[in-house]
Structures are given as C-alpha cells and as structure tokens.
Length: 295
Image 1 (tube, rainbow, N blue to C red):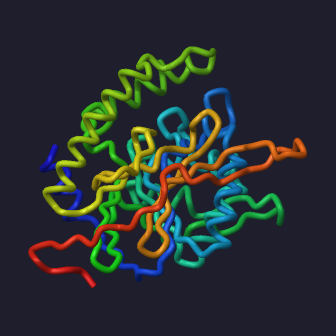
Image 2 (image 1 turned 60 degrees about the vertical axis):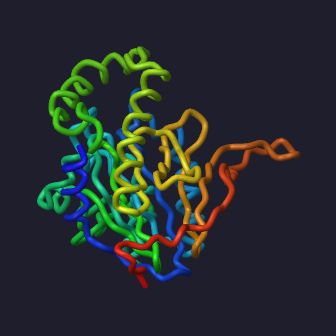
C-alpha cells in the first residue's frame, strides 16, 4: 500500500497558495439521479447553502472524490441534469479558478479526460432555458499537493488504502450496481454495519497517518465518511450524505477547522440552515522536509 501511495504522491500536481488563502474541502457527495437510492437528495439544500457561503466569502472549493454516484448510475450527464443548480454554482467557482476536483472510487470513470470532456462540457440551465458551457478543459486528478507557505497537504480521495475499492473496484462496482443498489431501492441497508465500517476506516487511517509521518506532511481525504481533525497529520472531511448534515474542512489563513452544515429551528420556530464548528480552529503546523521550509 505504501508504494501505491508513493506513486500517487509523486504524480500529484503541486498547487501553491498564499498564507491568507481560504480553502474548503468536501467530498463523498454521491450525487445521483433523484431516485430512491440517491443519498445526496436529502442534503442538496444544505450543499447549495454551503456553496453560497463559500463562494461569497472567497473560498477555493476542493471536491475530494465521489462527487457523483457512478457505481449505481451509468449516466453522468443525467446526474448533472438532476442537480443543475448545484453544477451551476460549481461552474461559478470554476470560472474564477476556484474549483479543483479529484476522482474517487465511485466516480473513477472521471480519470479519463475524454469522459470528462463529453459529460462535463455543457448543462441545461433551467433559469435561462438553454444549454450552456459547464467545465471546459476541466482537469480531474487522482491527487493534489497543496502548499501553504511552510506546510504541505496531500489531497486524495482515500480509497487507495482499501483493497476492495481500489484494485478490486470493478468487482465491487458490479456488486453495488446489480446487487446492493437494487436492494437499497426496496429499503434494505448495506451489509456492513457501523462497527465493521468503523474498524475498516481505522485501518486506512493508520496507513495514511504512517505515510504522513514518513513524508512529514498532512494527508487530507474522504472515502470513509468519518470526519476527523484531531491533532495528528491525518485529516478527513467526512461526507455530504450523513442523515441530517454535511461536513467540510476549512482553511483560512493558517487556521484549520472542521464544520458541519445542518437544518436547525430558530426561536421563532422557523427552519434555517446553520454552520457549526465541530472542532475548534487550530493552526497548521509548519512542516520542514530535509531541513528546508517551503515558502
């Protein structure tokens, strides 16, 4: 597994940001087509509100894989059509060079540039009633290396430490599309319970943490849907398919924090979308490699 991560790390493009940059990291949206097993549908308004906030406040948006659910759905263009409002907002980020995407295991098809050009070329805008350009020349990578002054953060989806979802992803995709997907449509839950899923996530976390310490960098990913900030070099932004909330990791200047977006009730009894800091802000550690600092 370490050699697999080494290869991904060495191939990852490097992005450099100033120490006053505002960055937000989200993943595992699993956008579908609005049917019974579309887990994103219940949180689409939370996502839209979060995008509004991050756009208005000058954030650069990173989507760390599994943006679309392409194991259960064959058509990416159909997903774009279903969530045209979400893609419209993502386009606004892209037009201002504030959008970066990584592919995961559930949207692995996006590793092919031809597939991306075909399916992300345009979308139907319901407000203007016409087809419009979406993400021309968008490059989707397996990973990025983000440098902020003397700190490096390795961004990837996180399936690279999961045998079933990496090397055996073709088999797993078949099982999800033709077995568990249809069963989910009629109300059955996934075979892996919370305890088993958590145990599996912990294994991956240990591998990523070991890699981060060896390289003396941060590793930030998704995949497990278990948000984590803590004090270590391993970070996880959670997902957008939690039952009642979505989570994200924000970096503002040199400070990093974990947040969630949820629907709450104000004192007057009105529903409102609220942003809550889950783990208090902490400063990014200056990390040196070979005795030299980035800057």
